[in-house]
Length: 220
Image (tube, rainbow, N blue to C red; front, side, top):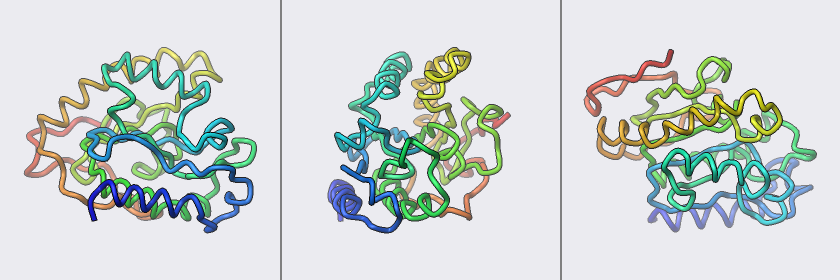
């Protein structure tokens, strides 16, 4: 099955999913959007009010700020694939619960495997924890590491800067290096072979590229 069909299949399954309690308050599921062949994948935490209304990721205030951040990073929104670790809105925009993250985990794995991006940008601590558990985002934001041959860059969620203006400079600085990170990933290796993301509870630690990249970017 080609990438586009896999993404369409995931979207159709997410739309009627009843694996966790989030489906009770769902208006529209938000599977994600973007090119099937994107080099860059952005993974947020979960849909908010406007996303739940429209069925699209990052369309509220945080989405507008994300568009600005991507532009500053030399990347166009229409050129990246954007999704979340959970595909339905947590009530009141609360944090996603472990059982909800687990229920949506397979959908995200299939999206990563199908799109096969060079670069994954995690937005917020819940998406970061899927690749880098037991670490504080304040310690590692903007510092890329390798995972399954992909460059993973933990960043603050855009909403964090809206709620805590003191973070705005850090967020803008991290996104300002996005084009640089993409170039580093391109130079390090050809597009990675498809490999599913580590499942919840079995996340792989940061790893250096072996034969497919000449250098490892430092985590700290």
